[in-house]
Length: 406
Image (cartoon, rainbow, N blue to C red; front, side, top):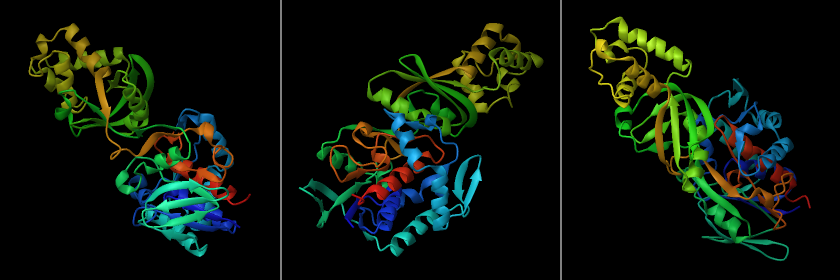
C-alpha cells in the first residue's frame, strides 16, 4: 500500500484517485479551487459529452499522435462507458457522441464524488501546490498552506484553458521543475480574430460554410459546419477544430489566413449559373434585392462590397465579370487571421509535457520514478466531441491503476 497525492481535482485526477484507491492505496487530492470537477461541470454546455465512440487518430493532435493511440488502447471508449455505467451514468448516444442520459454534467461529477467518498479518498480544496521535491524514496509536496509526503505523485493539474475553472497553467511549472520539457502551451478549441472591417457588420450571422486554413499560403486543413461570425472574427465548430493549427503558426510568426466558402454545396459553375439567373430575372430590382434568400442578407451585402458591386446597383447594369467577382467572394472569401482568442475563451490547451518523457502504458515519467502525468498537461489535445474528456479518463485510469503497484 502506498501514500499517493494527486495534484488536481479535474477529470483525469478524479478517475486516477478512484483507481489508485481501489488498489488499497491511501489517496489525497489537492485541488486549488473550492470544489472538484469545476471544468467538468461546464463541458458540453453543461450536458457533458463525456466520450465518443468514433475514436481515430485524426481526432487527436500533438507532436506524437502514436503516443495518444497507445494510451487509448490501454483504456478506451468501451471501458469508459462501462466505468460510468458502474458509477451510475446511463449513456445516451447521438451520432457516436455519448452523454449521460440525464444530460447533466453535474451527474458525472456527483457520481465521481460519491465513489471517492466511498473509497475514503481525502479531498483538500483551496490549496495551491507550490513545489514538488523528489527525495530519496518519497516526494515532498509543498502547498501554500501545508506540506505533504507521498510515495507517488500524480500530476493532473490541467493546462491553461479556462483558468477561471481551475486550469491556471501552474502544472507546467511543476513539471519543468522536475526536469520535464514543456512544449509551449497555446489556446486550442478557441475562436479566431481578424482585423477585417466587415466583421462588425457580420456580427451574429450563423451559416453553413467550408473553411480552409492556409499557413504561409499553403493549405493546412479544411473543415465544414456552422460558422458563427462575431465582431472580433470567427467562431463555430469548424473554427474551433482548426484553431490549434492557427495558434501554433501565429506563435511561430507565420502568416495565417482562411478561405471561406459560403456555398459549399455548389461548384463555382453552379453558383455562377444560379446567381446570374437571379440577377437577370428582375433587371429593374437592385442586385441586393435579387439575391434575397440565397444567403444571410449581411453576407450578400459584404460579398457585393468585396466584389466592388454597389448593393443598390440596378441588376440590368451588372456585367458578367462583376457576377464572376461576386461568386469568387461567396465561394472564396479570404480572411486574414491575426490571433486566437485567449486562454480565457479556449476549451483546451495545445502543447504541454513532451510525450517522449512519459510511458504510454502507465503514464509514469521516464525521468522521475513515482511521478505520473495525466490529462491536458500532456502534449495531446483532442477535437470537439468528447475526445478531450476521453483523453482525461484514459490517462487518469492508467495512472491510477499503475500508481502504487510497485
